[in-house]
Image (cartoon, rainbow, N blue to C red; front, side, top):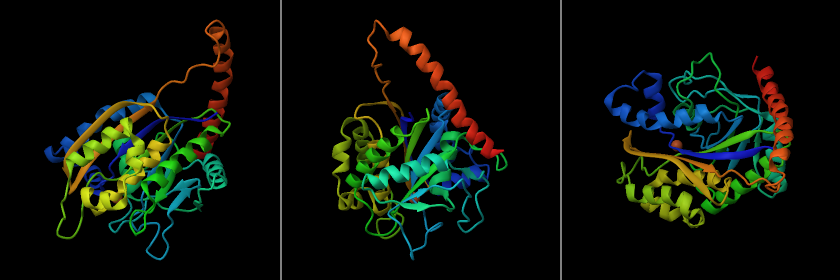
Length: 320
Ligand SMILES: [Fe+2]
């Protein structure tokens, strides 16, 4: 079966994408930000997930104020980078995973979480910036290291979903992934934030104390985070800090107990606090008794590999 192995929280500040695209990553201001993701990129190269689910918000690129779905799942074969006003970012087209995405849509909707299904969708910096931060810079004509299933969440127009709704959706996504028959190792991203306010008298607001407590409780007490009302995000983390509810979808999709693999926090990048965390599910105990474990493990692993290889080959064929 498919399994979520880890969750990644990452800011998606648009200026980070501009720094990558314009070759400014070595400048002292930006080096401070990018150096914080070097370990994460090494972790990602070693982990080699088969597919990533990326929870992000669209910034009036794919959806306008005329139509804003609360939760929109990308089921297409590919997602081109959106033109956000200065041309599309020079990054590869994001390749999807329609079979798994359709399975998630079916499972989650029948689990009573209503999603909008998107069979055609462009993706903006909300998704491609975290991809760069975790996968590194990828040539426009190359391929991202793994296929991606985008999940866009409305956090731009009131009312966004509650943190609790997001947390419970994460749990439904986990059930969906675990009912998919192919042996896939899946990672899930929650993106956005951390504290920031873009406009008004409080523009430039950053609340490091709030951000640190949020990062701490992702491991220690995620249910406490799920109970935070919108007004607390607005007051403590700024109007745009509401993006942090998207991290709770990622957290809900993980086990109750997780290991914090890595964390990075710096201020500011543009006018935003940059936060990043990697949380890993713990290896699950084998159901086999210790006496029989070695004998049972071998055939299981031997059977699983071709299945995963077949699933991966399907994606590779689609790419070529
Ligand atoms: Fe954003």
